Length: 125
Image (cartoon, rainbow, N blue to C red; front, side, top):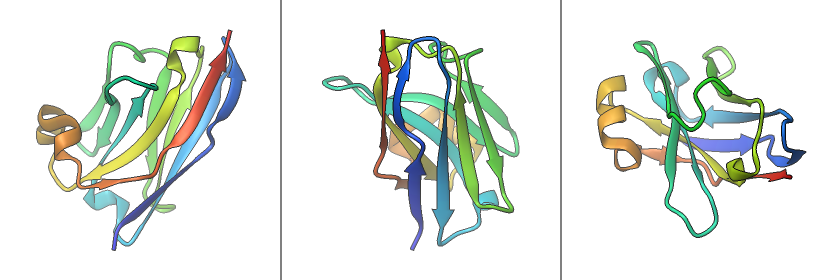
């Protein structure tokens, strides 16, 4: 059974940095296309970043500030967040897809096969 567990959320001041981790168990990380999403309170879930052997993708809202990376040996995906803004406040979710990079981008959250429970990031002004 594939499980994803996020960690690293918390409270940070605007302009600060934070790093999130997503530990994957029950499957080899290299077999998945991995993604980070976020969902602010009362809003829809937003795709932030995707990573696979075919490339990486960032949404316009985080491009240049966030970096997704993966360590297949540790079965862990990371999201490094810099220059944080109050509007980055949300619950951040890690997700895994068995689809390839391009299909994952096309299908978004509907194409993800596994989800973590999320970790809260709060950015104070």
